Image (cartoon, rainbow, N blue to C red; front, top):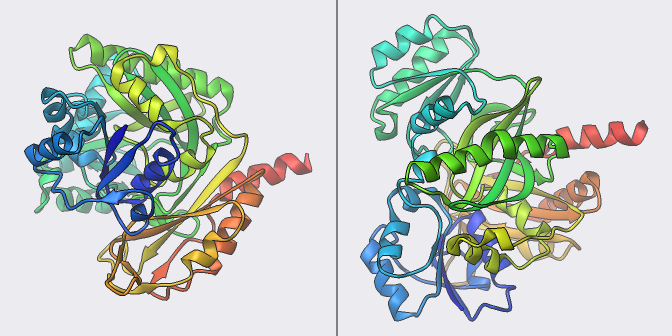
Length: 428
């Protein structure tokens, strides 16, 4: 099979890495790819927002399956265009991608069918939003309704912060034309993934990421500074409840509305005293969660994606390694604000030489001399597997120590919740 992978971040490198191992694969293309993806795929200069150009490429290269990594092309309807042209695509339609493309849409769906989530209100006027927020207890959560690359969520600790957040989301920000204001939920966050074929659902592994830029989960939200899988907080009971109370009702409702969901459904959860509650949906693999899911996947990824696109997940299953995977994000100085680009990164091969370590590239480029340069905000994902959280953690940070990159930084506490739980269980 010939496969085209859309995207060029760490998530896409992890997917390319997994897809490249499939015996079903003939040629893997990636648009645009990055310096790491180029090791396992042919990177092509293809403007993915030009849907007809993508169709033409697929026909010229006899592409059997397109895998769309990021959310923006999905919300923009790339799947619809490819499907209309007779090209098989893994990923939801634009109508189904509203589950990520509009937080207001998802909150309204939750309210309509009783999915447990935070209380909320949505506004298209800054004045109305501020009047509402002024009457709510703090902390309170202010979200841009549309796509915001993981940076459209502000947890306001004071009324003044809430009002400032509302102003910032409405000012000069197309995705802030509407905001959703939510009750602040208390608990532990977790990421839950499921493949969906429009009707059937196949649960994947769980994960937990670290959204805040700073140590101890302090500072502004980012796209994610690290992750690990599985998430110990997600017991078998909570996985069953998540499927029965959140995932399956959503899939059934989307089908009932005539907009069936196909692809991977990523539920961001808060595990509260009352059980799992939905924070938000994403309609693609997480980033950096994909970087810890793919190393744990024992089965071939490619037929699973085909089964989702073909609507036959009810005849499918996946196997997982009984290991822990942990990834540390190395980000460019200045992230999540304005990252500094162009600095050279050395030592990636030395880091990758450690047993159980894979370095996934996110925002990288290779210059004419072969040097690896920083070309984005989140630049590398240093991923390690181990029998325990501690083993995976120590391997990952040993690998980080071998990377020579003064222009970047990382958090030193990825996995701290799981480490604490593992230590407690050992002592008990």
